[in-house]
Amino acid sequence: MVKGKKVIIFDLDGTLIDSIGIWNLIDKQVIETISDYKIENVDLGKQRDLILKKYSQQEDAYLEYCGFLKQKYHAKMNKKEIKELRYQMADKYLKEVIDYKPNAEELLKYLKEKGFILAIASTTNDHTIENYKKENKNIINKASFDAIFSIVYSKGAVKELKPNPAIHYKILKELKVKPEECLIIEDSLIGVEAANNANIEVAVMYDQYSDGNRDEINNLCQYRFNDFKEMLNYIKEELED
Image (cartoon, rainbow, N blue to C red; front, side, top):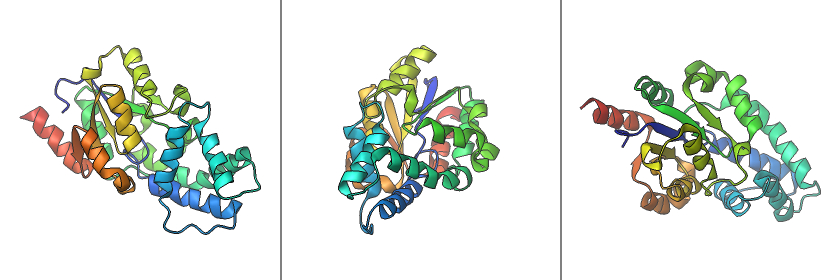
């Protein structure tokens, strides 16, 4: 899986960090704040991914997502106001609650020690990434982005979001590597599609919030793991055999 590779590219939300459920909670709070709706039995993560995929080539897909929330839930606030509210609500979670998935930092440190170049390719906005890098003590104390990753690309790095492979092409160009010299680690369908569109092998890290697309994800990936301990053991066996 990693033997012969030079670069390992990680998605962030839902892959390295346990955040999708928190973003679903934030969106639930946003919707119930801007409207009279009470959200129950709605797959907010899947709904969000579908809208972001639809608007992936727009200048600001998350702004268009907030426009979708305005229309769907008949909000009086405009989409810019909804976006601002969303990130105000998210601020405490981003700085104090969100953390690496169990054993993720162990895998990152092991790969770094083995000489792999590590990168992040995320559709998360720049402000959120900065919170993770500079404010989130859980992440900083376990494996800070600056210490581990050679490249951290967020939404602002390219115009087109996943499943468009633009962010991966940018990494390939910057590091001067070929697709076959890379591995992508993802959790979601749009992430796996982006890896496929870049012709890069992809390993899937299980996240419960992607279960709605599980069959499609499994059909498109080359490797899949239930947790980072399982992935770390697999890689150690491969490299140290």
